[in-house]
Length: 95
Image (cartoon, rainbow, N blue to C red; front, side, top):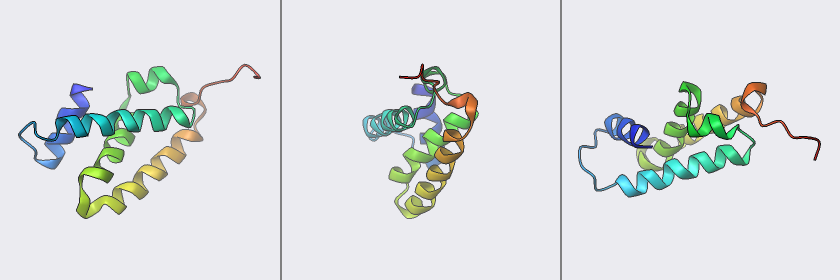
């Protein structure tokens, strides 16, 4: 999680720790949101660039107030792509 935190802070030009706890909450919320649509847990826990991009975009939709709508729409599109890509979705055992 620290890597994502630092990447997000760098994107936003944040060089202090004042918002770290809130950013970490949003990172975890993004992960839970992706798990909620069936994304494979191991891909969320060790994200590739596509998953990382989605998580970062989710966080920026809250952190960057000026561009919140842009990031929110982008996250919705990214999530939709992930949801429709077989290798990202958990396979159920018919239950």
